[in-house]
Image (cartoon, rainbow, N blue to C red; front, side):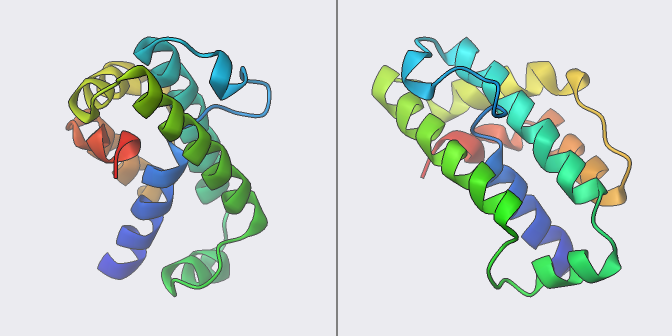
Length: 131
């Protein structure tokens, strides 16, 4: 169970660095606050994907193999916003605080989604925008 939770949290941490498909191009975001808004949107998308997985899907994620295509797309977008955060000088601590301030905008139906929300609210979002 711990291994599965860790795998899901890792996916969410990587994915949280960006917004959904309707979000602005990462290069157009010029503030840490804007990046945090996009990150919260992406985190909600990630939680929604996790909440929609059945037991077999959750087990497949925990095995650490190739993530489903939906998660790959989110990770790619996340990488773009992480790079943008580095370009404009957003620190990991600043991004963690900005994300924690917005965690109330998120919702989760699953235990794993709740785990992600609790981690963000406890300030563990520094992993979202850093190496």
